Length: 126
Image (cartoon, rainbow, N blue to C red; front, side, top):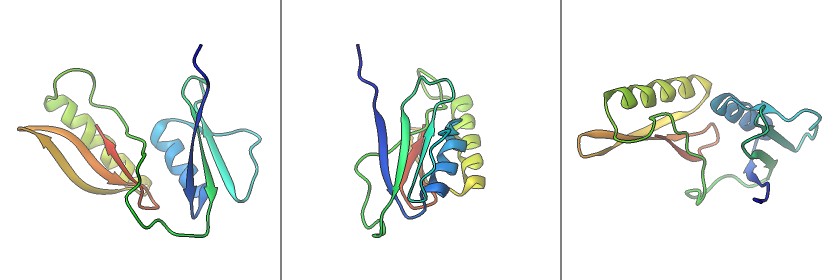
């Protein structure tokens, strides 16, 4: 049997990051989690891992070595429909506070979109 696990991340504003990622992933704020220096989000179906954020005093200074990617393109080969799904999701995330960095292509097909969350953490929409 697999072990349940949680992803943890540092943040300047844990509540803001929790709200962003909850909206981005379709998660909810963890019921009963009340800590001014932390926040946690959970899959409402209790299938995917929880994600927690802890307030730290230092700012982000380098590329993150582990990040969350959002997969909306679908399985198999990339096509115009998957590129459209990626671009729609990226636009939605921009309204939530993300920044689009660039689009990366595999040949002539959109492979993924590199983005930054509200605190500058890199992630991709693929």
